[in-house]
Length: 174
Image (cartoon, one colour):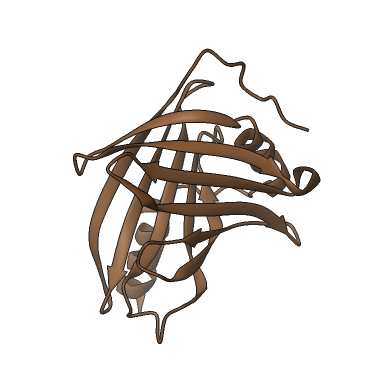
Protein backbone atom coordinates (compact mmCIF):
# COMPACT_ATOMS: atom_id res chain seq x y z
CA UNK A 1 0.00 0.00 0.00
CA UNK A 2 2.82 2.40 0.92
CA UNK A 3 4.55 1.80 -2.45
CA UNK A 4 1.32 2.40 -4.34
CA UNK A 5 0.67 5.72 -2.56
CA UNK A 6 4.29 6.77 -3.10
CA UNK A 7 4.06 5.90 -6.80
CA UNK A 8 0.86 7.94 -7.13
CA UNK A 9 2.46 10.89 -5.37
CA UNK A 10 5.56 10.71 -7.59
CA UNK A 11 3.43 10.39 -10.71
CA UNK A 12 1.35 13.41 -9.74
CA UNK A 13 4.51 15.44 -9.07
CA UNK A 14 5.97 14.47 -12.47
CA UNK A 15 2.98 15.73 -14.43
CA UNK A 16 3.21 19.24 -15.88
CA UNK A 17 1.19 21.84 -14.03
CA UNK A 18 -2.29 22.32 -15.42
CA UNK A 19 -3.60 25.84 -15.42
CA UNK A 20 -7.18 26.92 -15.27
CA UNK A 21 -8.23 27.90 -18.75
CA UNK A 22 -9.70 31.32 -19.35
CA UNK A 23 -11.49 30.50 -22.59
CA UNK A 24 -12.42 34.13 -23.28
CA UNK A 25 -8.84 35.39 -22.82
CA UNK A 26 -7.42 32.69 -25.09
CA UNK A 27 -10.15 33.34 -27.66
CA UNK A 28 -9.21 37.05 -27.67
CA UNK A 29 -5.63 36.05 -28.53
CA UNK A 30 -6.95 33.82 -31.32
CA UNK A 31 -8.99 36.73 -32.74
CA UNK A 32 -5.77 38.73 -33.01
CA UNK A 33 -4.54 36.20 -35.58
CA UNK A 34 -7.06 37.58 -38.08
CA UNK A 35 -5.42 37.99 -41.49
CA UNK A 36 -3.53 36.14 -44.22
CA UNK A 37 -0.86 33.58 -43.37
CA UNK A 38 1.68 31.42 -45.20
CA UNK A 39 2.10 27.92 -43.83
CA UNK A 40 4.90 25.38 -43.98
CA UNK A 41 4.55 21.84 -42.68
CA UNK A 42 7.15 19.44 -41.35
CA UNK A 43 5.58 17.02 -43.88
CA UNK A 44 7.03 19.21 -46.65
CA UNK A 45 3.96 20.98 -48.01
CA UNK A 46 3.21 24.69 -48.09
CA UNK A 47 -0.07 26.55 -48.29
CA UNK A 48 -2.02 29.59 -47.23
CA UNK A 49 -4.43 30.23 -44.40
CA UNK A 50 -6.96 33.00 -44.07
CA UNK A 51 -8.18 33.67 -40.54
CA UNK A 52 -11.44 35.55 -40.18
CA UNK A 53 -13.43 36.66 -37.17
CA UNK A 54 -17.12 35.94 -37.86
CA UNK A 55 -20.60 36.16 -36.36
CA UNK A 56 -20.03 39.38 -34.40
CA UNK A 57 -16.88 38.02 -32.84
CA UNK A 58 -18.30 34.68 -31.70
CA UNK A 59 -16.31 32.47 -34.09
CA UNK A 60 -12.91 32.41 -35.75
CA UNK A 61 -12.49 30.58 -39.07
CA UNK A 62 -9.12 29.18 -40.16
CA UNK A 63 -9.43 28.52 -43.92
CA UNK A 64 -6.52 26.56 -45.41
CA UNK A 65 -5.92 26.28 -49.15
CA UNK A 66 -3.24 24.58 -51.16
CA UNK A 67 -1.89 26.04 -54.45
CA UNK A 68 -1.62 22.63 -56.14
CA UNK A 69 -5.22 21.60 -55.32
CA UNK A 70 -7.62 24.56 -55.44
CA UNK A 71 -10.71 22.42 -54.70
CA UNK A 72 -9.16 21.00 -51.53
CA UNK A 73 -8.40 22.65 -48.24
CA UNK A 74 -9.72 22.55 -44.74
CA UNK A 75 -11.66 24.72 -42.34
CA UNK A 76 -11.32 24.95 -38.58
CA UNK A 77 -13.83 26.95 -36.56
CA UNK A 78 -12.94 28.04 -33.04
CA UNK A 79 -15.55 29.31 -30.56
CA UNK A 80 -16.43 29.58 -26.88
CA UNK A 81 -19.36 27.53 -25.57
CA UNK A 82 -20.40 27.71 -21.91
CA UNK A 83 -16.93 28.75 -20.78
CA UNK A 84 -15.15 26.10 -22.90
CA UNK A 85 -12.93 26.89 -25.87
CA UNK A 86 -13.80 24.48 -28.67
CA UNK A 87 -12.76 23.94 -32.24
CA UNK A 88 -14.37 21.90 -34.99
CA UNK A 89 -12.06 20.81 -37.78
CA UNK A 90 -13.66 20.22 -41.20
CA UNK A 91 -11.12 17.79 -42.60
CA UNK A 92 -10.24 16.43 -46.02
CA UNK A 93 -10.77 13.03 -44.37
CA UNK A 94 -14.47 13.98 -44.63
CA UNK A 95 -15.11 14.07 -40.91
CA UNK A 96 -15.52 16.82 -38.35
CA UNK A 97 -13.79 16.20 -35.01
CA UNK A 98 -14.52 18.68 -32.22
CA UNK A 99 -11.67 19.33 -29.82
CA UNK A 100 -11.73 21.12 -26.46
CA UNK A 101 -8.99 23.29 -24.98
CA UNK A 102 -7.83 21.02 -22.18
CA UNK A 103 -4.63 22.65 -20.90
CA UNK A 104 -2.50 25.75 -21.23
CA UNK A 105 1.04 26.69 -20.37
CA UNK A 106 1.56 29.01 -17.41
CA UNK A 107 2.18 32.00 -19.70
CA UNK A 108 -0.78 31.16 -21.96
CA UNK A 109 1.40 30.86 -25.07
CA UNK A 110 0.64 27.15 -25.67
CA UNK A 111 -2.86 25.68 -25.66
CA UNK A 112 -3.59 21.96 -26.03
CA UNK A 113 -6.88 20.82 -27.55
CA UNK A 114 -8.01 17.20 -27.18
CA UNK A 115 -10.74 15.14 -28.82
CA UNK A 116 -14.25 15.68 -27.46
CA UNK A 117 -16.48 14.16 -30.15
CA UNK A 118 -17.01 14.19 -33.88
CA UNK A 119 -19.29 13.70 -36.84
CA UNK A 120 -18.66 11.79 -40.05
CA UNK A 121 -17.09 8.92 -38.11
CA UNK A 122 -18.56 5.51 -37.29
CA UNK A 123 -16.42 5.44 -34.14
CA UNK A 124 -13.48 7.25 -32.62
CA UNK A 125 -11.19 4.68 -34.25
CA UNK A 126 -11.92 6.11 -37.71
CA UNK A 127 -8.97 8.25 -38.78
CA UNK A 128 -9.28 11.87 -37.62
CA UNK A 129 -7.37 14.80 -36.18
CA UNK A 130 -7.40 14.03 -32.46
CA UNK A 131 -5.18 16.57 -30.73
CA UNK A 132 -3.85 20.01 -31.56
CA UNK A 133 -1.36 22.24 -29.83
CA UNK A 134 -1.50 25.92 -30.67
CA UNK A 135 1.59 27.97 -29.79
CA UNK A 136 1.56 31.75 -30.09
CA UNK A 137 5.03 32.93 -31.13
CA UNK A 138 4.17 36.63 -31.41
CA UNK A 139 2.00 38.81 -33.61
CA UNK A 140 3.48 37.51 -36.87
CA UNK A 141 4.06 33.82 -36.16
CA UNK A 142 2.33 30.84 -34.60
CA UNK A 143 2.53 27.04 -34.76
CA UNK A 144 0.00 24.23 -34.74
CA UNK A 145 0.86 20.60 -34.07
CA UNK A 146 -1.78 18.09 -35.16
CA UNK A 147 -2.03 14.45 -34.12
CA UNK A 148 -3.76 11.92 -36.37
CA UNK A 149 -5.61 9.14 -34.53
CA UNK A 150 -6.78 5.84 -36.01
CA UNK A 151 -7.45 2.34 -34.66
CA UNK A 152 -6.69 3.28 -31.02
CA UNK A 153 -3.32 4.89 -31.78
CA UNK A 154 -1.77 8.22 -32.60
CA UNK A 155 -0.40 7.69 -36.08
CA UNK A 156 1.64 10.83 -36.78
CA UNK A 157 2.27 14.30 -35.61
CA UNK A 158 2.67 17.25 -37.91
CA UNK A 159 3.95 20.70 -37.00
CA UNK A 160 2.82 23.61 -39.15
CA UNK A 161 4.52 26.99 -38.93
CA UNK A 162 2.46 30.04 -39.87
CA UNK A 163 3.97 33.39 -40.84
CA UNK A 164 1.87 36.50 -41.41
CA UNK A 165 1.62 37.31 -45.12
CA UNK A 166 1.50 40.86 -46.42
CA UNK A 167 2.22 43.86 -44.32
CA UNK A 168 -0.87 43.97 -42.12
CA UNK A 169 -1.59 44.99 -38.59
CA UNK A 170 -2.50 42.11 -36.25
CA UNK A 171 -5.71 42.18 -34.31
CA UNK A 172 -7.97 43.96 -36.78
CA UNK A 173 -11.30 42.49 -35.81
CA UNK A 174 -14.63 43.54 -34.36
